[in-house]
Length: 118
Image 1 (spheres, rainbow, N blue to C red):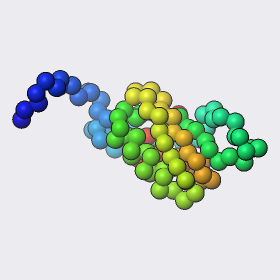
Image 2: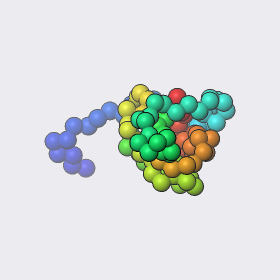
Image 3: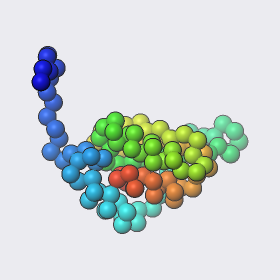
């Protein structure tokens, strides 16, 4: 295989939360954590308080595949019109959800994808 002048980057020892060896254990731990769902500070609604845009802090995301996994899981929920993630590898990423989907359903979708809300 010819890789030309591209540097070869080492794989992280812990692996990615979405496809690394610890993904199944992380998902199982997240399901039983009982962590209360708490949206992180979101901007003030511009429509007099009826906005359905909320933001959540998600931990354990490390790459674009993680982002796509969470966005797809949350976007599939009834009532979600859009879901996007601002990735902070190794830190708390920001999930922004638009639509009237219940917070509990969003939490379940994130944990089913293998991550946890902070």
